[in-house]
Length: 447
Image (cartoon, rainbow, N blue to C red; front, side, top):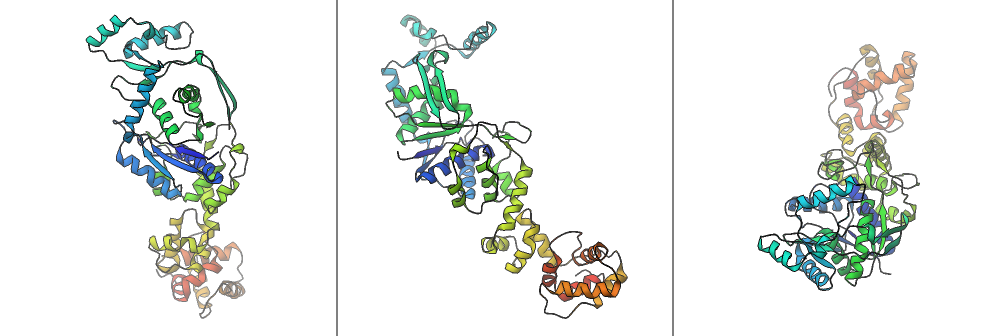
C-alpha cells in the first residue's frame, strides 16, 4: 500500500504542541514508509479562519522542518463537497431536517432527563411532504443529516486496538447546515478519498467520529483507510490545550522562549511512549527510531521544564558548524569554534551565548570581594599568548603566593574576571578574555 497521510489544521488560532505532535507523528510515519504527507487547511469557517493564522501554520511547520508533498485548502473545494452531498441525497442517505436549534435542545434535555442518550429521533424522516412545504414557505431552511445504517462498525486501531460501535447507538450527524455549508464530517471524507489517504492518524477525540465517517467512506464508494487515534496531549497540570487560548503555542516557544526546533521534536516524538527522551540533532535520526507501535494509550503530559532541560542538552551536543550563522545573526560577529566550545556547556538557550560573548569580548564591571588579593593575582598574570593551559599555570602561582585554594580562591577570581559567580570553565574562558581585560578587571576597572 502506498502510504499517504494528512495533517489538517484549521487556521483559527496558533498551533500548539498538541497539534504539532500529531503533525510530527504523521510526518514521521510517511517519511519512514517512503510515503507522502498532505497539508490540508480546513479553512471553511469564515468567521474564525484567517490568512494570518494560515501563514502561521506554514511558518511553524517550516521552522520545524516538517515539509509536505501536497497542499489543499478546503475553501477551494466547496463544489466537490456540494457534489458529494447531492450524491448522498439521491441515494437516500442524506435527509432534510427542519427542527430549530431550540427544538433540538429541548429534545436533548428531555432524553438526558430520562437517562437516555441524546440521539436524534429521526422525526424528520416521517415528516409529511405538506408539512415540509409549509415550513419552507414560512422561511424555514433545512439542515441535512446522514442516515446511518444500524449495523456494527469496527476497525483495528493502530494505537487503541480493536474498536467497536453500533450504528444504532450513534446519532445521525448533520453534514450540511441550513446555509448550505458542508461540515467537517463530510468534507474531510471527500478529501481523504480524493487524495487517496491510506492512514488517518489523529487525536482520540475523533474515535466516535471515525465510526460515523466509516459509513460515509462506504456510501461515497471510497476505500476506508486505516486509523490510529493518539491520546491527547495535556499540559503539566493535566489540562487540555487550546489554540484559542494560545496554550503552549509553537510561536511562543520559538520566539519568546528560544527553544530549538529539534529539542521540541525530540521531546514530542517520545511523549506517550516507553522510550527514553534523548536529544536528536537531525530529523533523519527521529525517522530511523520512529515506531507507531511504541505509542501507548496513556495520556502524555507536556512539561515546559522538561523541554528546557532537553534544549540545554541538545545545545551541548551541537557542533559549531550548525550554529555559526545563527551566532552571527545574534550579533556575535567573530564568534568562532573556540568561543562556541568554551560556552556551549553552559547554555540553556542559544541567546545565552550573548552573555558570555560580552564577558569574553565586551566590557564587564568586576565584583571585587578582596581587592588586595586580586591585585596580587593580576601581578602574577603570565604574558600572552594564552591557551587552555594558561589558567592552570597561573592558578598554581597565585595559590603558592597566597596560600589560598578551592572556592576561597576560585570564586573571587571568577567574580572579578566575569562579574558572575558561575559560568563556563575559566580555563576555556580566560584565553578569550585576554590579558588586557583580565588585568584591568582584577584591578577593579570596567573592561
